[in-house]
Image (cartoon, rainbow over all chains, first blue to last red; front, side):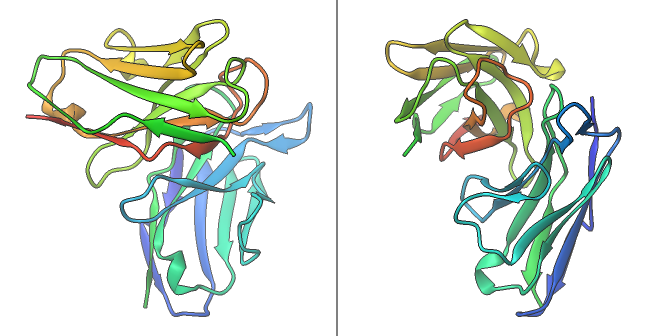
Length: 113
Length: 123
């Protein structure tokens, strides 16, 4: 199984400041035949289901604010919130969908400082 | 708009079974993977398995193999997950989530949308 490791476990950022979450996979999730990384990011607010933010490591889902961006390739990835808003308080998960079993990172809790 | 509507909360005794449903409204159903993901209280997300309704092809996470069954009914556009031999460690919110690709494969899909979740309490 591909193990997904997120860091940090939690972070507190001031409103309007940048938040960066890291995700590392135990093996590459890059598929050379189509030049894509099989990595997604989800946001989960308290009491809610996860919501897709990013797929193909850096493609923003329709309707997701452009302050959210994904980067990285191979085994190292990041989700950046360029200017944290109050509504961004949530737990964020990375997910590899390169193969089954699909696996998720342990989650990163983002709070307001 | 695709919506995944899940059945209501359940309470079960240890050793019993539970079956949770997920009805898909809108969009195609038969050739798109439906996945089940669970989340124990205060914990992260864990993929249990998935199914292609058209073929009945399933794939399970190793720790769920043999104790979990996923099925789908094309006539009602509903997928189900059944968990047997319940223990307190099965207490969790169970989510269904649709795969991203409009082709009959379980692998290589991100998940969107998700159902609201079904709380299963084993006590």
